[in-house]
Image 1 (tube, rainbow over the protein chains, first blue to last red):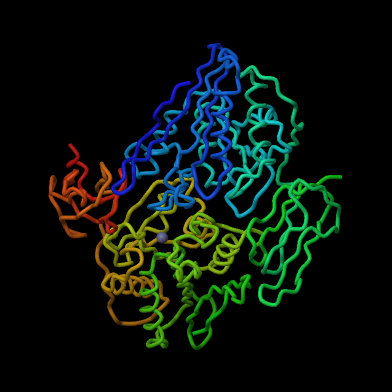
Image 2: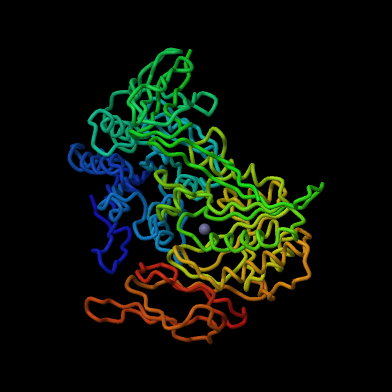
Length: 311
Length: 316
Ligand SMILES: [Zn+2]
């Protein structure tokens, strides 16, 4: 394993931001390669935790280094500055790194960071980005692939997560890492992590196992894994969005991953001042809860649950 | 004048979010009136538009007999952001000017921009007033997408601004108010002027004159009064030079914003207060007008310090 400096940004009052990657060199030059990008934003923990546990796994759990077949580059954190002070974006100008790709060497700070990162991760066969949903919801782990014309759905299933979300491309997605990585010839996948502020052992293991499964099934590492799910490819039509007509205190009563039946109560809204139940959230159809809103206070007309329809 | 709520949402704890519009129209209703919409406060840290819209509503109150069209004012699109010094939509941290066209079924920021776009829809002209951000000070300027410039440029020239910047189409900017409204057939102009979190009174008056001038030309107000309309310089006749910080530190400007400068003029220094070192001295790569200047002094490598509009041939 080699530790390599990906980029360095000085600061007037903080220690320099030094982003490092862990390069595990493969024993087979013909094997596919992969780069894994961890935390680009702060205020959440799973992208960071998963990537750092992956470094630990590759370093300490693979008994023989020859079982690493293809080159693997893991960059656990890009945005230490945000993580350390619980900011979400670049702390000075609040720009989102994941809207700066492919980056620009002569541009603004975050464009420069994006450019140096992008240079370091270019040329790999596969690219995995550990992300969080941008809205205020948490979900079970899944793969998000944009409908860009470059996506590889078959390989996305090798993570063995419950679903692969095949998502429409919006104008703002054209500056994301996934889209630009695809455009430049790497098969990129966003692994969407549960949006948590503390480590939940179950969901974090699921994210990590999925990545190890992907590496194994693509013959990047030689490592026996248990099969995960046979992923279902989900598009907009398969998702039932459940909104709450009332704002107030939000209490989900069904967990993410639960199977629910039509008209079953899955959550409630409590009047924030007077405490009574002002709305019962019911499942509009049979299905599995993929996401729910993650804060205690919810806006009117906000999405409280996303259900993948079944039946 | 009539004030209407164009969007409202009951917030979780004892408060209603309300986005308001005021409408000025002739006292005697007529058909086929031209309609202009003035929008501001999409970014919660930009306040210059608040002042311009105040000057305009106050002018219209005093001159209601001159009104010959419909004038809609939307001073505070991101109402929650403005009152909390938050650029994006609070909580979601979403840039509202990257959330258009939005939708009824979307999250709250998407609902707000959708309501705005639907309400402005049908206007002949829309003006979206921005004031840069808290980092940079800008000369009053119009930003125009090349795609729509055939229709928007003639209006831009009436707005009494100093500079018209015509830029290429960029996919990510399709999610802006101006792109969305231009596509709906409303000729939409973006004004950038001043700096975030502050008012620049002379710019407010300058743009007020421009808006009155444009409204007069379009027959939305009828008056013999002459409004100042300065000749703007167009980005196409020269080149914009970007000066980004080569290193991180405290930026101390040497020149004044809007100054006409010569090539190699000293724009400022980047210093370190801790040890008194001058880390970098910044010189102008071209002569021209210093139309953007850093206001917030803490910089990182890459932070924009200044922009100069100069002659293309000076590059060599
Ligand atoms: Zn703005």
